[in-house]
Image (cartoon, rainbow, N blue to C red; front, side, top):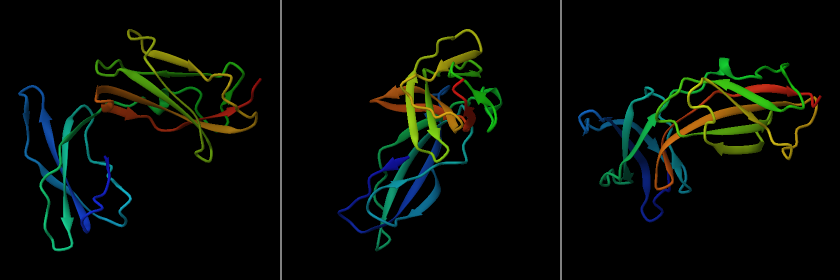
Length: 193
């Protein structure tokens, strides 16, 4: 989650609350405090919830705490469901010495998930400099193997190692992804041959 800090008041901390959404009964569990983040600047804040389960929808709210210890009202809520991610074991090529030639084709296998609407491929250098990011719909909804070709306009240098990752996204509301996942980073050695 990311939000802009309140610049009007002296905020010293944000309290993050989480509840489980139960779609089957169209209900919401009790909100519980999961973190208190002390502010370090007024530029903005983010929180990554690392204690969630896949395929469970969560609702989040936050409160701001001022220098006197007063808490604000709850913010609007935000929901998110972590989808099952693409397994690193299924991503080809993957390895510091595993070569990618002039065909520039990446492959992965997946378990079809009804909610998944699109993939986002990220290709970066070993120094995490972004080279390319592309979002597209799956081409194979019935099978379990997908592929994508890195466009020729993306400059890859022979003998260099690159990283790539596949994100999934779904349930978009007002342009925001409400379900998704990120794979781990796979690598390849580009040969250009």
